[in-house]
Image (cartoon, rainbow, N blue to C red; front, side, top):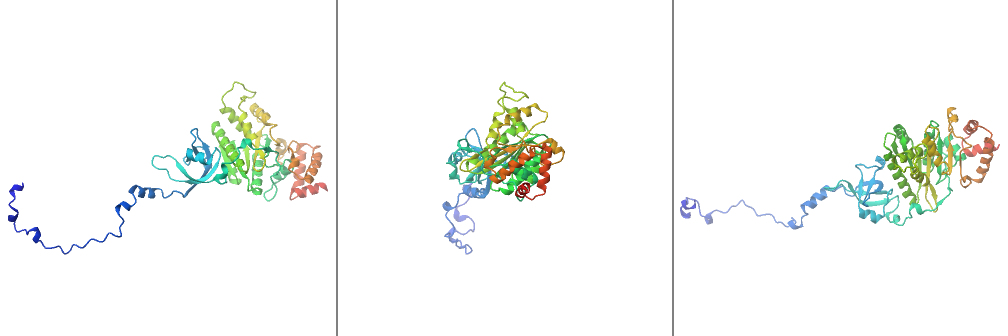
Length: 425
């Protein structure tokens, strides 16, 4: 207690505070002129933010827009066949309205890492939409209101990467920009190989065209082979996946193609096969109560027809070409019904023949049954007149003899021009 202490004077021999010697070792404080005031320093949270978001603006992204019911959207990645994935990028309602985005738009932009409480990488900047400036997109005409025309410009299938198959197709059933083609094939007639050769020829001669190969209900090893051997985007849903997935993948590929066509691009979809796609639509469509022979629902074929019918040549630029394979003689009544529904809808048809394939003559093409409507718009007049003579000559032969004759004559010449001149002689 304080009372026990004596008066301050009596506290031992300690000198009074005033008598203490001055401390010589204490130096003057340095001047604070070079240090900023505390109020001017960056806030601690701001410093943390800067450290946390140093990636902002340097993470590029590209994907296809898929709209959600609440008007926001996600950017789906092609690595996951445009299905839900951890790499999805979130697009806000405001961005969707600002840029006029629709399902299928291909967007290039930048993202930032998600903040606390956010699940996805949000889109921070849009660089281009469908390969065009974002301002261009707002004034586009929707696909349904574009004017369809007959194909007028031919895809060149001959040249550096040409094979005998592509040379035969180039003469007998030329493919134009905006063609709706059906490759009718029995099992094991080489339809997938033919599709691959056509894809390689178009990729080599028309690098400006955007090509998508859509494989529905195919074998996984064929998907890998196609992806490695063709310079195109391969989107696949293999036979071990459910029908709902086949349908979703096909829908988003079609939407992507439509958006590109709206922006004036030439797009090609090679579909293997439309029969399997129609089966998938038949599985997922709600029962209407009306069933056709073979177990096909009456309303189920409307959507695959809409897919196939989207192929068209657009007035003033842009075209969507669809080449689809249709299976026949599989032993399934359903496949026959599906083929009959699609039979008259295309404007180009290639018939593959099992008898020719059994003779190991490729392509196993039935030349008399194959052809393109309005081919006079695609072939030059001199080639057209020679083709009429050639068809007249081949009409007396059986399909096997005709193909063997063509195979023999074509293999002796380097290109189609030389072949037609040799036929003249």
